[in-house]
Picture 1: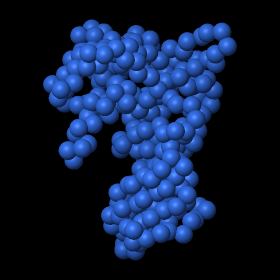
Picture 2 (picture 1 turned 45 degrees about the vertical axis):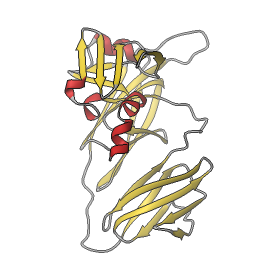
Picture 3 (picture 1 turned 120 degrees about the vertical axis):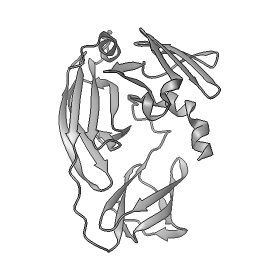
Picture 4 (picture 1 turned 90 degrees about the vertical axis):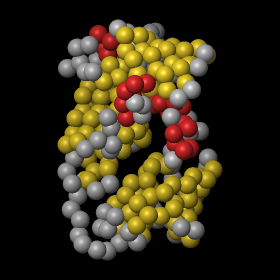
Length: 248
C-alpha cells in the first residue's frame, strides 16, 4: 500500500530484547482536520501518521464539528503501516436552538464560560447558546483557555490535554504543506532541507536526527514521504511556525 522504501524504513518496528513489536498507522478522513483518538488518547488532526504502536487491534475515534462521530477498529501488524481511511457523514442539524460542547481528554476541576462558572456535568457535555465563547478550564496542570464556536443543535468537541501526563506518547507527524509554504521545503533524494523565516533545518528521511538552527536535536519521528507529500514531526512544525501563531 505504501511501497516507498523510505516510508517502510520510518515505520518499521525495532525488535530489541525486551521490547514489544510495533507498527504504524496512517489515518485519513474526508473531510480532513478531524480530531483523532487512538484507544482513548488524543493524537492530533487527520491526516496523521502514528508510529511505535503496539501490534494488535486498536480503536480509532474520529470527531469533527458538524459531522457524525465515528469509531473504527484497526489491526496493526509488526513492521508494517496500517491504513485507516474514513469518509465522515454530515450530522443533521435542526433550525435554530442552542448547541452544546463536550469536554474530552483531561477532566477539568472547574469551567468558566464567558466568565461565568459552569456546574460540573458527569457526562462532560454542556448545553449553551450558539455562537463564539471563551472557555476557561482549570486542570491539575493549570489554567487552559479556549475560544470555541458552538453551532445550533450540534455538539462541538473541546480537547483538553495535560502535557505533564505520564501516559505514553506516540510519534505524530503531519503534512508539512499544512504548515509551511512549498518554497520553504526541498527534498533531494533522502535529504530534506527547510528554510522558513529565520529557521534552518536539515534532516534525512528515515532518521530522527535533525540539524535545527545550528543545533543537533532529536525528534520523536523521522521525515516521511507518502506519495509526493512530506510529513514531519508535529512538534517540529509547531516550533517552526510559533511566530505565525503569535502574529494571528
